[in-house]
Image 1 (cartoon, rainbow, N blue to C red):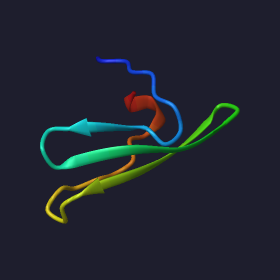
Image 2: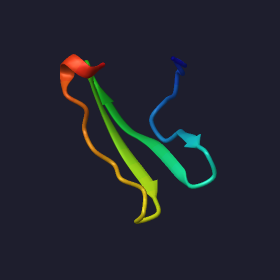
Image 3: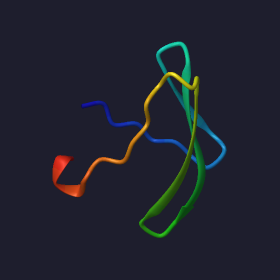
Image 4: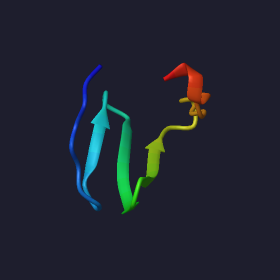
Length: 50
């Protein structure tokens, strides 16, 4: 597992076509925006899958 530190407004690039933007950090909650092509499936993992 890779752990990264980012600030709001910064992003993480995954491969060539997925970008994860840090939109907001409020307490323990982090809001993300994910930009990817339509053929990339994005879903939430259940808490016990972490």
